[in-house]
Length: 252
Image (tube, helix red, strand yellow):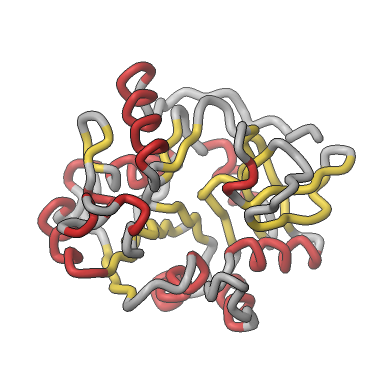
C-alpha cells in the first residue's frame, strides 16, 4: 500500500503566520506539523510516500524532509498542486504515483495520539473499496459527518448545519485504485471544491465502504484554536504511539 500526505492549500485560516510559510511547516510542540502524518503512515507499515504540496514554500519541504531519514525512509516523493481545489483535487495529482494500488491518504494537518496500524491491516485484507476512520467529537459540523443506523453508515454529509451524529470522518482515508476514476466524475460543490465526502459517498453507494473507530485523541491543526489544542495534546500525552487496541465499530 502506498501513502499520500496532502500538504498544499493556502492556510488562510492561519494568517498572518502562513503569509511567510506553508501551514504544514508550522511547529506543533517540538516538531513541524508535517512530521506527524508522515509518522502515522510509517507506523502503519507504509513507506512508499508522496507529499503533495503547493504555494511559494514548496522547496522548504525538500529542505526539511530530504529523503525521509528522520522516519527511517530511503526516499520520499513530491508533487506540486497549483491553486486550491479541495482534498479530492489534490489527491488526483497522486494517480501516477499510486499506479492502481491501494493507498492511504492523510491530511497534512491531522494528528493522532495512537496509530492506524489495525485499520491499515484490515484494508489490506479488504478485497476492494474504501475504509474511513471515525472519531466522536464535540463539533461534528466542522467535518464530514456520517449518519449512522445500527452501526452502519447510510450517508456522509459535509459540514452539516444539523449533524446527524456526534462522529467526524477523520482526515485519514484508505482507497483502492478506483478512487481516481471517481474523482474524475466529481463536480465542484457550493464551495467550489471537489469534496472528498462525495468520493466516500460513491463508495458507500457501491456497498464497498467500511469504517472503524479511532482510539485515543485526534485533531486537525488548521485553525488557531485547533493548532493550540494539537500542541497541548502532544505536549501532555504524546502522539503517534505505537501500541493501540484494535479499532472498534462506531455506534450511533
